[in-house]
Length: 472
Image (cartoon, rainbow, N blue to C red; front, side, top):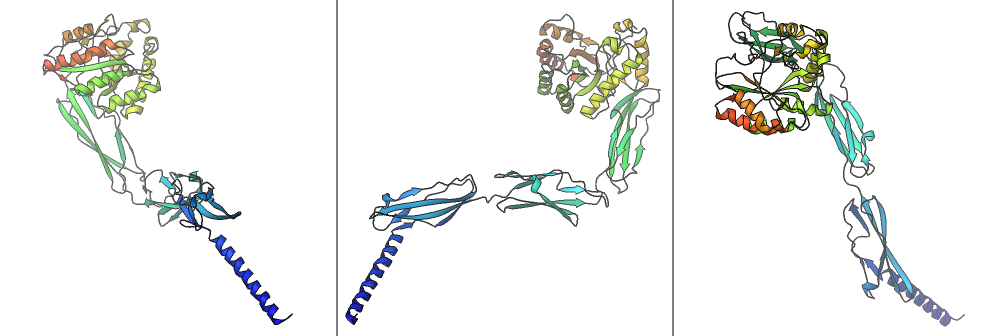
């Protein structure tokens, strides 16, 4: 082969190589992406498609395929394809949907907790949730170091949250001191005063010193204050007070006896709470800024919230009966006290007050008790006072549990019975189910009393008792 032919062949080969390389370069760059080849999108954020462009043909000829699910973490491919001279040319964009939000970690209990001495902290718990992965509580890692507890949780995307709980080993919590019985009470002149006592506990100290200061002189009428101070071993103190009034013995008549003073009206409601009447009564009392007394009985626990509401809104929650079944209550003194104890325990559980104010079912003057035990009311009325209870009857009756049918009749009975010269107008009404006649008369009764210059008040242990004559 001569040199000329060789040169020709080399030239042809070089030309072919140039053509091939040029073609590859041409088709490779026929289509190019707008924006980056790899794009990250935050979870639940919108993916914005920027598209592609061509160098020699219309961009509308580009076919774009592929989808991005912005609600699911993952890697997605977008394909851009174009045909030129019968040849398909494509490019890809990678879209990464990523979770950048850290889990939420919540501690149960306080961020700072008090622990006595070298005692071990009893974990109160925690919860961890992730907006994408859901409940991660089981993945929480707990580590304690130098009285700091570290709680750490990490999701599958590497997002991490850490919270701290601090342990305080200094006893800064005061003892819990509560009075047995009411914080206000009264005792009859020249009788014996027996203090009901107190309950005390402390988070750290087994020994708590309680001092009682003050004295009740039952030989003189007046108001006395007893101060109870509890001190734990760390020196933390809690103080509560009980006010005791020494009063003269009150009249036992049903309405003629009165205690000198300005006109005072005590609105009382028996047999509640009820779903239909009690909320309306409370609404009216709140509107008129008047406090009242509710002598409650046991109903469904679904109505317990009403007893709590009565107490929280500043009214007196007093004791009527657990069963209000005459046959049960008055069959014996033991049965009566068992019934009373049950309603007393329920009221204390709901209000925190061991109530000593009560009203006999049917009143102390009832005769129905004769059917079950002769003489029981004579014995109970004496013993109740000796046990420190204050029982109240009434000297104004609305008649709403009897033959009265209308709100006008309720209003007439109450306003007729109120004496502006009497400081102990105790009004008997009821808040049983659908007692609309009383509900509809209540606001008018309050307006009448206010117009007459009377004060409305709730019964407490300093209120002089209004009682009936005993008939059994």
